[in-house]
Amino acid sequence: MTLVSIRHDPDPLAVRTRIAGGEEIAFGEPFVTDQERAAAGRETVAERSRALLEGNRRRAAERYAAAVPPDADEVIRVWYPRDAGALRSRLADAALAVWAEDDILHVLWQGEADEVQLGSGVQPPLWPVPGSDDLWEASLRIHRLAEAVISIMVLPRRAGEPRLGQPSVDHIVWRGPRAPTLLPAAESLVGAIEDHTIDSAALGAPRGLTVYRPPESGQPGPLPACIVADGQSVRMFARVFEPAILAGAVPAAVLVGVHSVFDPAAGWPDPRSREYVPGHDRRRFNAHLRFVVDEVIPWATRRLGVAARPWLVAGYSNGAAWSIAAAQRRPDLFTGVAAFSAGVVPGRITSAARTAGIRHYLAAGTLEPGFRRSTRQWAERLQRAGLPCRHHEWVGGHDNLWWEQELPAALGWLLAPT
Picture 1: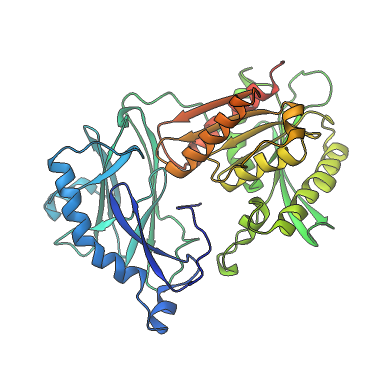
Picture 2 (picture 1 turned 180 degrees about the vertical axis):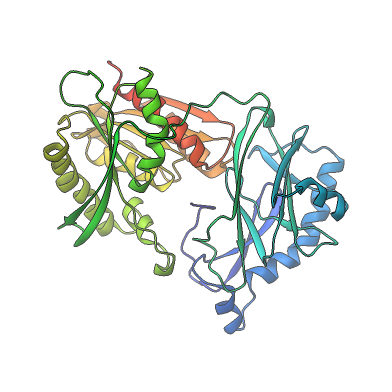
């Protein structure tokens, strides 16, 4: 999960500060630990965070007292002093509590850690509660909070642990009183999930695939298929996609998930970014694209019996960036793109893609500012060019839950007769 947009730092031990939601947040090269910084006699991220905390609290308290509205990013941090005992009572027997007061979302977590980060729908660090050694909190004023659906994931970290790749320990999905009704998710699937491995000549190594085959639909002829970036997530997508197929809301299609590689120990840019974002490593990006086009799709056409066309391509976050870039390079093959929360988009539309008239379904959350901005920019670029594009925004963040929800709508629109 991408917490922030990260670029390579020429000084990997440096600690820097960014502003998000009105808060000064310390950060550094994500694959360098604070232990490594301290061993080199450098300031650590934890030290900078502690130094910023008092000023952050003071400004957040001023914003709360003045009822300052959310900024352009739709969310702003607020704070006011509260009794640790009263907060603890909010937890009852749970470690995580989330509740709303008007347009303020409160998150409270109890646990042992040196730092705590939220992930998924909202992603600020949690602050330690004064007067307690195990309570952590965040209070966020959010525009249109009553319409929001937000996954809250707690990512605690001990000193010396990397800042990426940490597992979540607690998870809640919070829904506002006017939130939209979500599509149902299947407890078990009627269709089949299959795992395969291809020994790739382009990549010089084996790579995994996860395939979802829907139940018999009665559709004539071979089914259309969609390449899914971060293919391990096909299981996640199938839980919501299949009920939509069975309800007759979307056409049946085969999902062919191409696994990504994420290795926090590999340094930056990590292997997934090198394969998905053209600017990081052109050779690796091109090799991965050849693998999909020249090896995966011919294999799927033979083995799975899917239609030669249309082939769709879908992804989220960096996978959305890859999906857009792949279709720009191979508009002869990919007729439609489903891209959710795209962090990086091309600066221009290729002439071949413009001629092919590739259809795009684009979506992002109001609480993921950089991804929202990039996704909207690409939608506007396509619309100015007169290309078929549907653009949607949800009240939420960089969230698996929303990506699951968007896929049936995206594939339904992309496969609809033109």
